[in-house]
Every structure is written in C-alpha cells, then in structure tokens.
Image (cartoon, rainbow, N blue to C red; front, side, top):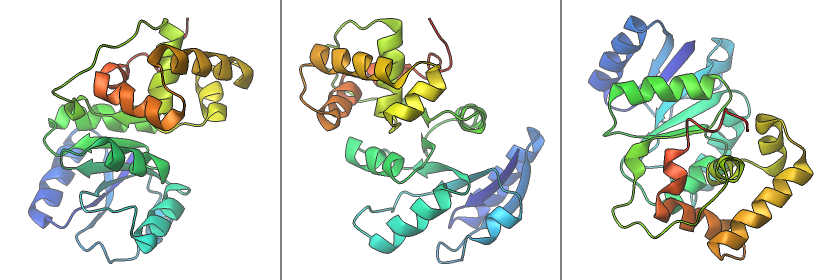
Length: 209
C-alpha cells in the first residue's frame, strides 16, 4: 500500500513513516506544510493520504473544495483530535474514507488502512460518547446499513458494498429510521452516534447475512 502523510509535526510524521514501513507499507511522501500543493500525490501512486485534519473547517470553502477534489482521486484517512458528530460527518461528506482519533493506538491506524484500502469506510472506536442513549434492536443487515449511512455512504454505495439492490437499501433505511424515531438521515446519524451503536459495527460491514 502506497501511503502519504500530511502533518505539521515533522517528528511525528517521521516516526509514523518508520512505523508504517516496518509494517509493510510504502511511504511515498511526507508533507509538513498544509499549504503545499497535493496534486502530485496522485502521480506518486499514492493509495491513501493520512492527514491531520484537526483544524479542518467545512466553513472554509477553499479547504472544503481542495479536499473534496482530492478525495475523488485517492483515499483519505483523517487524523483528528476528539471531535463531535458535526466534525466527523463533515469529513465523511467531503469524501474522507476514514476518521481516526489522534489518541488511538497505532494498531487502530493499521486496521483503518486495511479497511480503507479494501474500499470500506472506517471510524475508530475512540470516538465513543460517554453518554449513550438506549439503542433500538436492529437486524444484522439493518446494522450494516446503519453503519454505512453513519459513515456517509449513499444508498447506491451501500447497495454495492452489501451486494443488495438499492430498493432493498431504501427498505432497510426506512425501518432503521422508524426504529430510531427520527424523520431524516441527519437526525438518524446523530442518534446512532450518540447511542454508540454505529461505532461498533466496523467488523460487520463486509459481512452478509
């Protein structure tokens, strides 16, 4: 897997680079200045960019546009400080494939790289909320659909990942929304994250009934 690292802390970047190489990955670039152009990463054959996006703001139209365009060319894993739902959701909305807390262990990063490299979304378990509301009972397939919805996937993407029809996704989605007592996807994602149910489903996404 060809990786690139974007982090203003050069010492951290170098240490992370050594760790990734020791675990069988190729690091093709390390970037310490966020202002540095990132277009060349595609030419270097970068599969995944691991970027510190702790200061990313969806209200910054330039940053939003830049990362949205980049996410269409390669996969991005965001390293961020402990963040709320809005920050995580905005990152998935621009096309980021994974969000990992900077407090996570390096083994979590390796897990995220594997998941993202295989075409899945990834959210580290560190983003657990201390106060969890009671979660409704869902079928295994409803849980998978919910996990992918929470991670920003569209109905078409979910259908492709789970190898089911878009119509079936709509049916599962409607049932999940009903069980959570919400009226739209935004509130569904919020309730799912608050309950903690969507944060423990990473292993189920690739499975089928």
